[in-house]
Image (tube, rainbow, N blue to C red):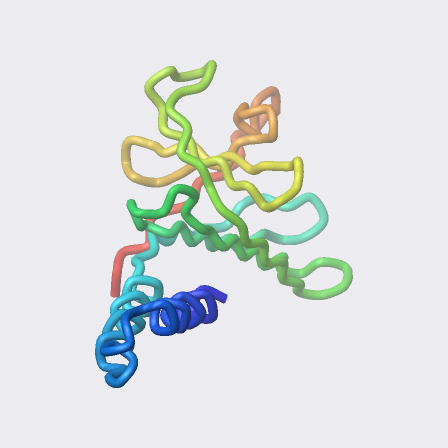
Amino acid sequence: MKKTVLIIIAGWLYACGPSENRESTTAIEEVVENLEEKVTGSEWIVYEGGIPCIDCDEIQVELWLENDSSEVTPDYRLVMNYINTPAGDTEEAVEGNYTIISGYDRDRDATLFQLNPGTNEPRYFVLNDDRSITMLGEDMQPLDEGLERDLDYNLELKEAD
């Protein structure tokens, strides 16, 4: 989608530019290449881990956060593999954009990632001191609060290969 938009913009620039530029497409090709490099060259921060599941063995989670400061609303991709459900292993993938929130009622200095999947059901993760993140409930509270046992909803930062 982004490449298509870039090509349309480059074509528009070419058509609307001075006629001396129309004889040589080199300048336009360079603009398109630079824009494509910016779009495809963005870096991602990746978190992964296993979280508890009610009707399966575990949910293996992988969260990709776009790390591009030029984006007003950077993208994310959340992939959840449900292991050993009654229907077998299943996968769910959600994409959208995310917002960084500074502080919430538990910790005014905390950094939260609010995942916006395009519905009214955002997901929240809080950044921990050790650079891991913890999944929170839709009320921005820990998911294991009030339970007799501690459950692990942490995702670890995946180091670059």
